[in-house]
Image (tube, rainbow, N blue to C red; front, side, top):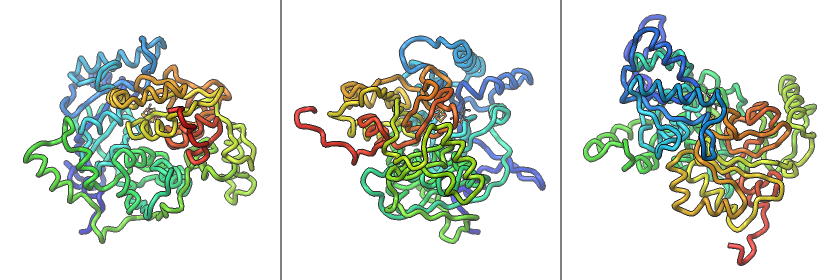
Length: 471
Ligand SMILES: CC(C)[C@H](C(=O)O)[C@@H](O)C(=O)O
Ligand code: SF4
């Protein structure tokens, strides 16, 4: 029978199927961080269980780590991190602690090590586990009790899902990126539009994306409410994986590529739903509200809630504008920001830093604006430094930080003050997400960089040319 990519990966992992029961799936990779693992380890201790497959389990410290040198001063954060270290030591799980060459945001670490591979099932107690779907893996965020289940058994009972194809055809215009695609998709289908679905992104515009851009797209699947997001593996995927630390080698590599090449939805496979997007019509996209679906093209204005046909949308928009301190009709390009955050598991990879550095080079961060540049991992940081990107950012007046989740969420010292407004390359703009009372506009790395320079939401096309001699 014809099957979708998601169905194929699912079927190949079922270890038990019973009438009226959810399928029990084998899990190929289990990633851990300090926030959602402590009670899971406590549960193991209480029941006298161990970690079933320490070789398929990996932990990193990301949410609570400061991005300036020095120890963790916040007692809650310190306890979280110390608890993870103790648990990993006790149960024999590999951990990448602060300062380690492999430390970083969990969804940056897995792919860069070649641990994330096509056709795998991957879980983590973190909603943005969907990122790994960019490789054609079925990757889910799970709750703490499920973390315990996977630690103990390396399996997980999972409810059936529906499938949605997100078909993005055509060519992106200059300055339009993966982030703009996914923000536009979420604005279209809404934050609940993907509920119960595994999304499969496909079409010529998706095929044309680099692996890192594909990760940006899949990362935000959860912001549409989806269970997961996937992209069928292809040459781009294989080229990215080739030679990575945990990628197969020699004859194993050839066999793997052969098997991975079969991981695609059959031509006659049926999706429960399909959304079609014309990539050539997309422009840089920003959010104006307090959920990732409240977004609009940068070239437009803050929308007027009173003109929204749907009563729920209207009420939500009213509330959002009140919180965001925005007036309907204000051109988005005139919205001033205090802070620019470049980083996170959505846009904290080397290509994101390169793209932003390219815009910033020879320019200055606007007076009164602070810009934080936070690599997604220690490796990304090292790579960026070897290319001199840190100097480009520093010369522009931006802060070059240590890797971590940073200002993506208020669990570490990098936070917005009440009322402060940011342009942020992260994935969530909920009330208080980046600090109590903070106001977040989600943007691409290109928009983040241009916004830093002009001090208002901007794209690189809005910038004056770099003057001679300023390089
Ligand atoms: C802290 C963690 C559980 C959470 C998540 O699940 O996504 C965080 O990473 C986030 O982005 O909000
Ligand atoms: S960078 Fe942000 S979205 Fe990603 S795992 Fe960390 S807190 Fe969650």
